[in-house]
Length: 116
Length: 258
Image 1 (tube, rainbow over the protein chains, first blue to last red):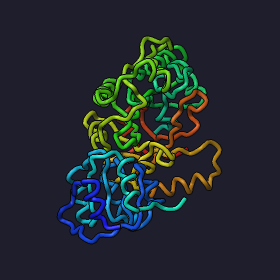
Image 2 (image 1 turned 135 degrees about the vertical axis):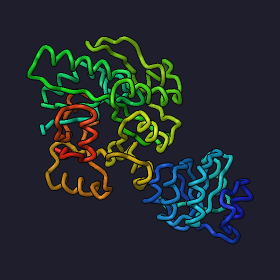
Image 3 (image 1 turned 90 degrees about the vertical axis):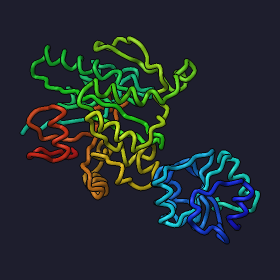
Image 4 (image 1 turned 120 degrees about the vertical axis):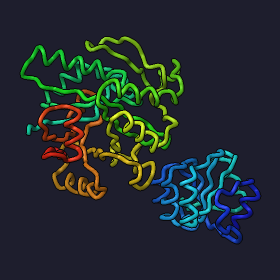
């Protein structure tokens, strides 16, 4: 799925305009606020939906090879977190919707998580 | 130097999940029975029973002169990331000051909440209930990890990453990787009772790689838990200042997991 479809559909606010997001494809998705869980289970090349805004979200996204992170419920991380994400080339977005709604819309767009 | 057995993470009946029987006299009795010389009282987001346990220890020291038990003031703060931070403080007043800042961010505990999460008993030194904490201690504060560590340091305390090897509310379970920039003074490891020496060694070895002092504490919620996991402190005297020096390994003072 092209990430720009999700950005348009959900009205996502881009926090990392320094990074080129055109033609970025995401191949899966994961939702969790426990970063230990994300590390172990998020599919590579996917998009992470979370309300966790700690700096470690970027380190974990890099480690788990995530293409983008969507912060649900209007959560915005601190400036230092955004700077790190730009350095590490991780796209960050904020959604005004709760995580349930974000994931439901992404699913409707055809995105799938890891199989059970 | 003198050796002291320490258990620096003990809850009282004030913690919603703490046993009703965790009264100041019961804690002091269990600690002395198990040969502990240093304990820290660390209830969730509150230092409301610290002074009562300190007074209970002073009373038992007066009546039985062979007993030498020191009670360090502390609390276990829940950050907005739902990470537990053990704060060891220079005294009950400093612990109360940290607790006041944290509690200002917690919701009220109404009767329904107390029924679901547990009573939050404020006790006197004899163990008689004198009130209850009005804020919901089981909730997470809105302060982030960095804020909490700074707050503890600003009041002269030490910030310890609680039970790092536990699957819930630990810095590793919540944040995946150990945040070196957080400024922790030490790392608390929980070693289950009766673990084989080899398991204990590999667990401690794993966390020694973090490059921070390791402390073993029980996280006791019931009297039977007290001292099940302990640290040996080599100190000149059982005071907070000596304890912080030992954690930093200053002047020949030291700590090791027992």
